[in-house]
Length: 380
Image 1 (cartoon, helix red, strand yellow):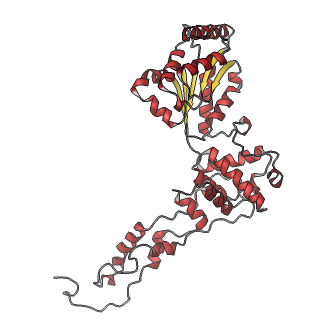
Image 2 (cartoon, one colour):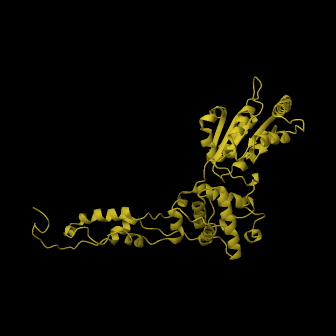
Image 3 (cartoon, rainbow, N blue to C red):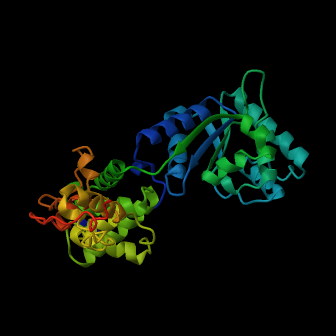
């Protein structure tokens, strides 16, 4: 709907696993290399761990479509919540074993025959399972036994297990130690850093035919990163909805106010980082200092304020107690090639630190102090 308004050839933030929109960070390149190596070299078990929305499914499809895996015939399971009987039935169907593979023994015999015939033609047959954290223990045991198929020199059925961090926890269970020992390769995808989030957004916009410099402001990109917590799927959802809102408001580029509206619509503000809140609200530092307890009142009635150094501990304590107000400085450390801010977009104004504001707000000691008896000062 908004493609023509922003100059796109196609929608840039669809949630499908389209390899054309695959964005490579260093960790994504490493994971892709591990997957290609594990499949093309017939390693027993390769494990890919990543939080939901980090791009595991897209990486799996990219690895299977690569030149290194062009001779790999893959059986791909993306819904592993099956019983043991359903799992074996699915294998029989995917390997085209026919109706004769009724029992488990006949299925395993037919499966091994098919795999060995393919191996004789220098083909590799692989089993790839996505969402593997949902696999029942009994099916994980079946997978371990399938991975035992081998010749004297090579495994016959390499297995790839891709799942969320719960999969890593399950592999540490004592009952699955034999499966864990067969893991030859393991890689992990973590949420994106701020600079990677900016580059990810720019890459998808550029692939869709748009100009990254005219779509989102710097503040908008920062907020998208903070509220998405660096998860590519959530970033795409936020960007897609922000572009739709900008189109409805006839606004280019998309700014932080539109992004905050999207965050409220998707209820992403609960527990949001302080940096993101500071990016839009830009709270007054003086107000934050004023909220701290007893900054303007002396701690003791005695006129210890006669010496300037006496006020310093109270100010430091109040500054330490004050809630942190973090200015948006992360993008300033990002590489200059992340051209995601529209030309002329205003930068965030410099924000004083809480400690500096507290020192300015603290009462200044009088210049002249009359002498008082030592008894009034509590001295003996």
